[in-house]
Length: 78
Image 1 (spheres, helix red, strand yellow):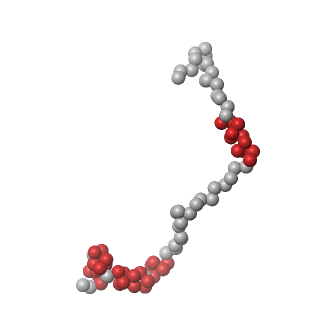
Image 2 (tube, rainbow, N blue to C red):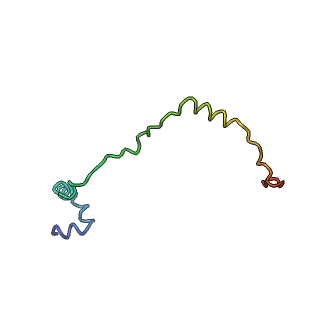
Image 3 (tube, rainbow, N blue to C red):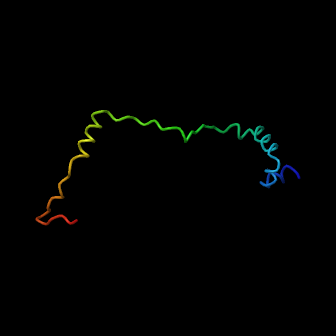
C-alpha cells in the first residue's frame, strides 16, 4: 500500500504505528505548534478567606431574616 493510501485510511495507520510516529517526528507543522502541559487532576490553588470574612460569614449565616415587609398594605405572598 502506498503512503498516500495508508494516510487516507485510518485503519491502515493503526496497523503500522511506527510509521505514524516517524511521520510525526519529521513533521514541521507539528513542530511549530505551541504546546502546554495541562494537569487537570492537580489540586487548584484556593485562596483562604481572611479571618474577618470568615467571622462575618458565620455571624450572617446565624441571623434569621424577617419575612418580607408588606407593600402598600398588602402582605407579601408566599
